[in-house]
Length: 142
Image (cartoon, rainbow, N blue to C red):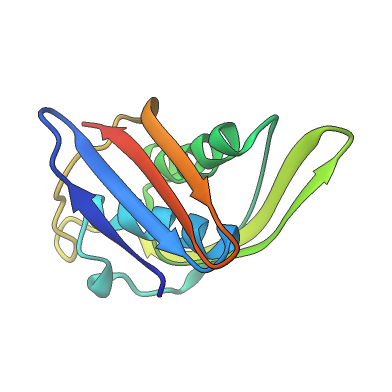
């Protein structure tokens, strides 16, 4: 029941990611981000990165989670194909997401660059939660 799809958008990339839980939906959101950048089936999951992001609400947490992968691509040339959200906890009014990602260094001879993602935006961002499903929508600025 987890997955993602790319939706119609005039200038950027709009994504709908979903899962049975918020953690699963966040994992799918990261997967969609990577797939927008390259063919993730060509990524060898040989580098593991622990990820921790903090925010005041779920929208900001989604933003921080995805921005971390854009930052790692821009600063270290890392692209990921596997994502695991280990926990999302609230502590003193702050949400803390702990997870990990597996991937490798981007190699233009091996990885096709699809879209150059500049940023995640709050424009049209939505998070819908029910007991059996969480759906996230967000726009990637290209």
